[in-house]
Image 1 (cartoon, helix red, strand yellow):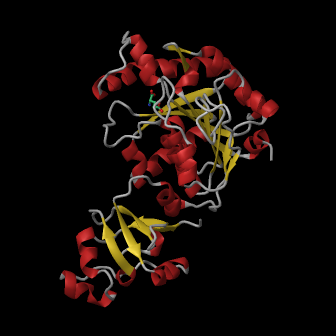
Image 2 (cartoon, rainbow, N blue to C red):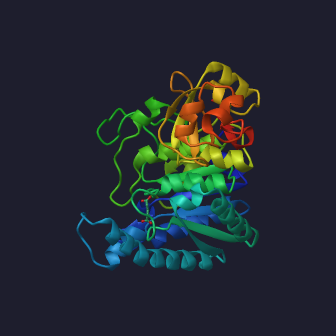
Image 3 (tube, helix red, strand yellow):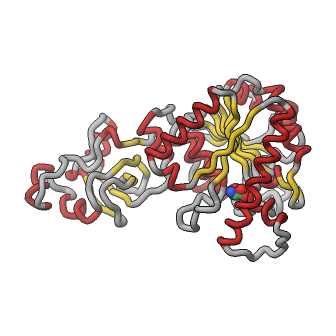
Length: 372
Ligand code: GLU
């Protein structure tokens, strides 16, 4: 299917716009945004759109007249605090010229990884969309610390797409898409038009090069496509740093499309599928894998190995003997407790741990199984 048609068929789309599109030489690029809004009016007037926009840091940096590359995290946060106002001022201006309303939402990594807060932001976004307002989302850079930070808006956009249950994630960037080799250094590099499975080969293809403003590069875009794919959402990466990028897509049908096999998930399983903050891993035997696939909960008896230190309530990953990811779920026990009860029947839990715990390690309602 032609890529523009795919976009037109989607009812709800999250579009991530990178800094290199919105900021030109430290200045906001009105001309580009006007052309993009023109595209939205021409092609997506009936589609629910959520925008994830970067650019606060470079805009703030130029406002404070900083030229050096070497700046610490606190200074970057200060840039973001200054630049975010410019970013939003310009969004309001350009969208109002087109009689469209926008709103600002700032999210942190811990907001999206916390189920309750992610549900709250979903309800806010829903209300905005119902009121015909386009939410413009950025990471809340001022409060995000290095350890607990998306850092790149690609994965943030994927997590937002999961939260709002979008049909499509679009990552607009300054390259044509994913190439089999780094096109900067290889003249014979070829564009990969469709990716059906994201594996280590695909990650290898992704160059770690970033542009002069953004922090992402192709690697984080692949990670974003993997997050979106895990709950059943396709991702389209294509060149946006040209005026009227959708018009251009109509003419040239370029870009890389990441198609997922996963079925769309709802509720807890949808949230679990997209979760990034994994605290530990359980290796389980084939009997347990089979039982999970038939709808059972994960019991201590099927557990072979406990990896990492995690606590009750944390999200943990489940793998098989070969390290293949089977799924994720919320653990009812701490890692050191599972270490003691692994391989044992649930009836022994009380005797070993000294208290009457739940019979399962992960209940089936809090379990997400990958279909790939
Ligand atoms: N939140 C950062 C900003 O607004 C962008 C991060 C990224 O480059 O993806 O500047």
